Length: 452
Image (cartoon, rainbow, N blue to C red; front, side, top):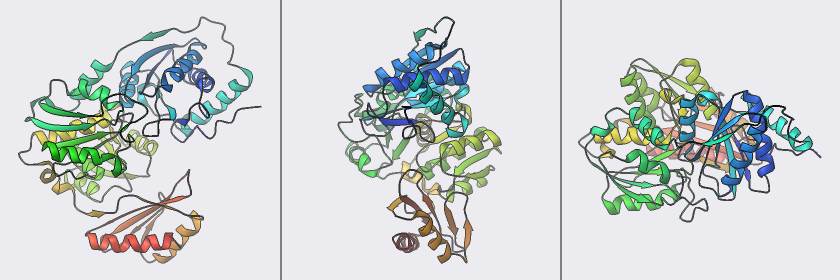
C-alpha cells in the first residue's frame, strides 16, 4: 500500500510528528527524490538541536548518496546558516528543523542552489509524489558510484558574512543586550556572530535542548517572551532579542520591556536598506502596518504589497529586484542574502540602529510606530466562506480588496484583514487604526460578525 505523505508535505516544507508521521524511511526517500529533482552534484545539509534530527539527516544523506550525489554536512545550525551555506556553495540545501513546533515534531526545509525556495508549486508536490513511489517500490537503482558524505563547519564564515551585511555594526556604542535563544539554535549562532562586537550580552536558555524545558521557542506568542521582558527590566538592558527554534525569526523587546511590533522593525530596516540602495523596491505583506509603505515612500523607495507567506515575498523580491522584504510574523528577507530570511540580520540591524543613536530604543522607534494595531486574532469557525461573505456584505460600501482573504479600507484611516487558515478551521483577523479606541471598536465589531 502506497504511503500518503500529504499530511506532512506542507505548502513550504515537510513537517510532522516523529516517528509517527516522519521517520528515517521517509527522510531517505525524500533524499533520493531531492537528489534526482535538483540534478545537482552535491547537496548541503544542516540540522537544529532536536535529537531526531541526527537520524533523519543521516537517512536523508543515504537517500541522496544512493543517487550518486555528494552530501556536505554543515552539522548544527540555524536555518539562515543553511541558506548561507547553500548560497555561498551555490548548491541545493536541506535544513532539518520543525522551527517553533513542539519537541515531538521535526521537519525539512528545502532550497535550491542560491537558497532559492522550494514550495508546493516549485518542487514539493513532485518530491512528495516521488518519495511515495520510492517508499512503495524502493529507491531507484543507480548504476554509478555512490556519493560521498563530508563534514564542513561553516559557522565562522556565516558569522563574518552576517556582520559584513550590516556596515558599521562593529563601531556602535556599547550596548547591554539580553538574548533569549529558547534552547534553540540562537544559542549556537549568537555567540559566534556577537564575538568582537561592543555588546554586553546576557544569555538566556542558550543550552541546545530540543525538549524546550523553559518555554516554546515561538516568540510570536507573548507568553514565550515574558521571561525576556522581565530580564530586560531587571538588567536595565538597552534591548532584548528573542529567537525562535531555528533562529530564522527574531523578536525585539525595548528597554521598557515592551514587545516591538515586527511592522516597526520592517520600517526601520527598510529605511536602513534604502540608504544602501536608494530608490529600491521594498516588499511588505498586506497585514503589515500602513507605516511601512509610508516610511518606504518617504525614503524614496517603492513599496510593493503581497499576500502573506514567504513564497509570495520571495517571488516578488525576485520579480521586482527588491532590496528588502518584511512580514508581520517576524520574517525579514534581504536581497544581499539571496532573498532569504534571517533573524540574525534583523537583530544586527536593530543593534546597529540603536548603537548609533543617543537615546533609548523606544524613542528611536517612535517615528515608525504610528498606528494602533490589534495583532493577529484567531477565531475557530464552522463556515469560513460564509462568515467572510457576511463581513463583505456588512462593509460593501467601503474599499474592498481580495488579494488575500478580505481587506477592508475606511476613509477614516482604519483597515482590517480577515484571512482563512489553509490548514485549520480558523479565520485570522488583523485590525489597524489611527487610535486605540477606533481600533478596539472595529476589532469588536468584526469579531462579532466572525462569531456569528
